[in-house]
Length: 180
Image (cartoon, rainbow, N blue to C red):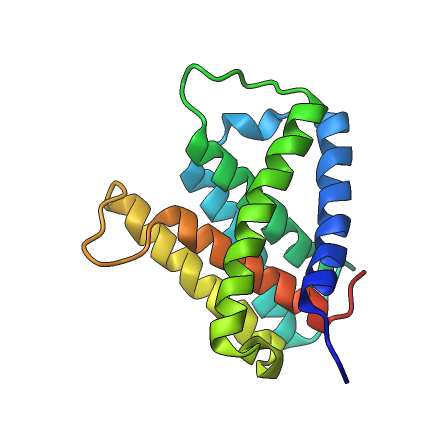
């Protein structure tokens, strides 16, 4: 079966983007008050819930893992945006500005994915969804450690690159779950 990763990626992102912009219309950019470390913790909560649902196979809340992966993607975009803002930037942003910024961060992240996907030969397609969850959790723990070290690393990628990887792993999971 032929695959078109770029098209599948765009299809998943369209679902996430639509929800992000609808929530921006409803709530404004209240997320701007969150420190990057708080966003990291939100991503951890979502990834941990996915792992719990994968292990227990039952949801008592009634929502499955798809909304959690979508949440991870959108929180990763928020985190990457927060890393670019300064104390002088306004908390409240127009929906049209958020839309443009969302697209910029996703396009940067997709470009990275396409380069890595080329080099790794789409190896993610052979991974279990639970492995993608574990990779996201590992990246979250790495980011938490970097944050605890005040952003200092010796040889490691920075926080931004880890958010990009988490976003891409969540997109891969949603592609595997056939979300469109």
